[in-house]
Amino acid sequence: MSRFNTAGEAESVWNAARARREEDELEEKKSIKKKIKELKVLDPKIAQNLSIFLGSFRMPYQEIRRIVLEVDEEQLTESMIQNLVKHLPEQEQLNALVKYKHEYANLSEPEQFGVVMSSVKRLRPRLNSILFKLQFEEQVNNIRPDIMAVNTACEELRKSKNFSRLLELVLLIGNYMNAGSRNAQSYGFDLSSLCKLKDTKSADQKQTLLHFLAETCEERFPEVLKFVEDLQHVDRASRVSAENLERNLKQMERQISQLEKDLETFSSSEDPQDKFVTKMSISFLRGP
Image 1: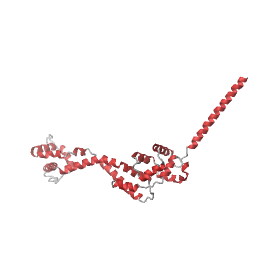
Image 2: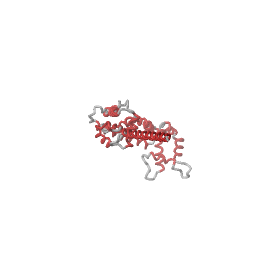
Image 3: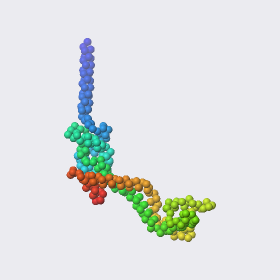
Image 4: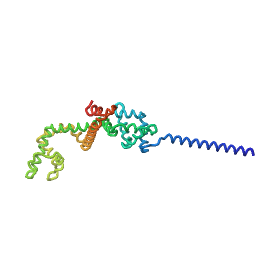
């Protein structure tokens, strides 16, 4: 009988210990839940991504604000601004966070950051302009070789007397072939017409006009064939995509135009820390 009592007591002690452990775990979960501050404005996904971004820099929020305001080139990085632009809440949300600045300590970290950055005038346009500044040299270096190749090739074409003479021969042959038609005695032709030389064939289909031109030059104007020596950069220029080059230049033109508008807008800033106009207009647009 005593053994039964002892076993029963042991089971009671075990059950009581398990109950206490479950109660402690429940209290711990409640405590953790309390530590997670409720979001006031931001979407949970936006807050999570912003929190990850902030954790990667481990920098006081006021310091990030200072770096942006002063355009601190020693601290600014392209990656930092790109991620800030990517994860920054929309301006409406930043404006909504302003009313919680007196509850700063009770806000989650992403929303605390939002409160700090909400005081920066035209934050997103500012960040886009700074990012353009950081990427500007790379963009220029990417398109400069193409521009130089095309410019040099155009200059070679313009100065080559042999190439000019070749064009005269093409015009002469064209006028001869068009004798009696409305195109006879033309004073010039579109350069794209040169591509038709290889497609225009003799009556017996055995020779193209391009072959005839080459044979004529070899027999009567051999010096004209030296035009190739004058056009050293034409091959490189021919591989440049005019469409891509024009698109890149127009994009840069739009960005510069937007920056100029921003400079006018930011010129009225009353924040003594705001160095945007000074840094962007002197060291960037006008050069050091």
